[in-house]
Length: 99
Image 1 (tube, rainbow, N blue to C red):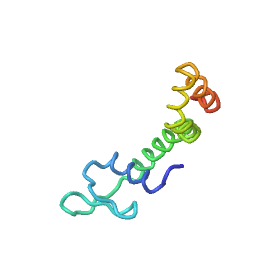
Image 2: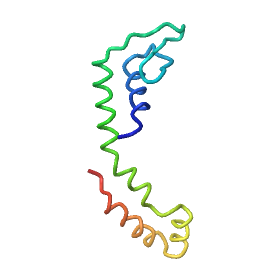
Image 3: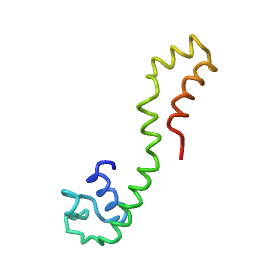
C-alpha cells in the first residue's frame, strides 16, 4: 500500500471538494476555516478505488527500480544501438509485465 495518510487525504479531497485543509487525515476545513463533516462511506469507497489503482500499477514501480540508470541506458544505446538497448529494456519489461 502507498502512504496511507496521503492516500486517505486524496480520497477526502476527491470526495469533498470544499475541503482545503486536512489535519492528521481526519480534521477537515474549508477555505474559510470552517470544519467540514466527512461522509466516511464516500471516503472509504474512494480510498478503496485509490488503493486498487495503486496496486494495479505495481509493475510500473517495480520496473522503475529495475531499469538501468539513464546513464547506463545511454551508454547501451551508444555501444549497442537501439536494438541492443531494446533488448536490455525488454528483460525488465518481461520480468515485470503489465497485468
